[in-house]
Image 1 (cartoon, helix red, strand yellow):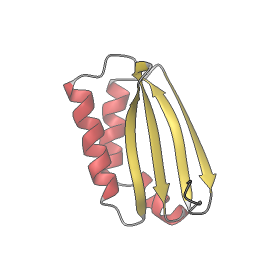
Image 2 (cartoon, one colour):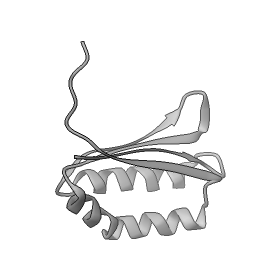
Image 3 (cartoon, rainbow, N blue to C red):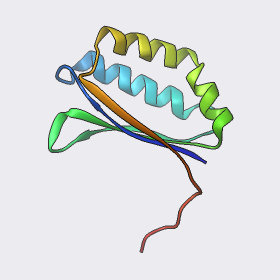
Image 4 (spheres, rainbow, N blue to C red):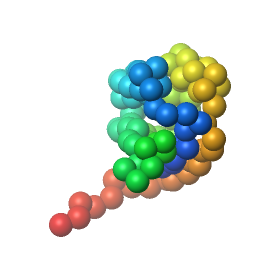
Length: 100
């Protein structure tokens, strides 16, 4: 399994257009074959910071995601609204164990 964790420090306040782009990206990504989870969240201590969490079945699924039309649209939107910074990390992992 491939997992991506990351942060995006927005260059502007999260507005309706940005929220729509994020929601559209999440919905389209979750519908992809091989997507196990895909989510953005706002940092409660810094509302202009987004947290990204993705899990993919394998590298082939992640590669297909990178070539998808919705990824191209999202990248175009982000290029027009560049973040101040971003930091993404890719991990090869297993399914993990439940806590508790």
